[in-house]
Image (tube, rainbow, N blue to C red; front, side, top):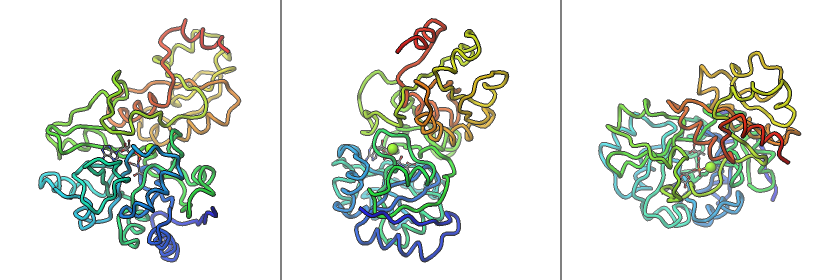
Length: 351
Ligand code: TXA
Ligand code: MG
């Protein structure tokens, strides 16, 4: 397939580019576009045939449903069959923004979009280009994260082009996304409201609108059970093509001579943790700003793949605020946690 790659500004998009991209959506094609969280791989949410191309392009299992992106209230009403007035009031204040809600689906949403479930995941993205694209297409756009299934999400158009050229009809080349981590998903049909996937909006952002939000272990990524509350959770996720291990305490590396760790492992840590160490690695930015860490996370996973090191070692972060989403992605991308000097020693001498 020939892919059209077109440069465009995500804040002040060129009308000609929008016309072309919305034309692709109207004709049942696929467009990779930026949202404020990560890049999405979109198609007409009302067309089963168009949406089947999404699953094919990213090799996504058919039992993993898609998020439907809307640009206005009219489209939300068209996609859903029941609306809780309290939730609608909350969404009036929160949207556009990185919050996805589950609602009862309407008959306009085809089966393959929701993987046969009677609910649909909906969100209104806070990105001018995405909103205008949806508006001009005249239909909601179903879009999972644009990465090939199991791979880290795409937060920069350069990675979108590298991964998807030849697999989609059009890629909007619009540079880096704002948050760099996916939207928060909640189930508002449950009382108290349940957090299904932590994301760019944290507890404090949502608390004013929803009394009491329950964070499930599944959302933290530490559930021992394989019960899939949200279908996508049972699959391998966000994973670089290289083993990644979590350091329960970044101080563990100091019990080895300088260089002994860096020879085999690529360290992925905050700038603070690198201070005073004479090893190179991938800096995630300052711990003082967890949004900066979140924004650099998927890019760091992709950088790890391009290094000659045997595996990656990543520090853990406090699970407060957006740190909950950061640790959820790190846990899912990693093969395990290193808890002691002995475990680290064994890892460094393996293979
Ligand atoms: O920020 C985001 O949410 C990005 C941008 C592109 O909007 N999208 C995204 O989509 O992260 P995706 O497909 O990578 O993740 C969507 C998650 C999956 O885990 C899926 O199983 C879940 O949402 N999901 C979708 N519809 C659902 C439904 N009806 N019930 C439960 N979970 C659902
Ligand atoms: Mg995804």
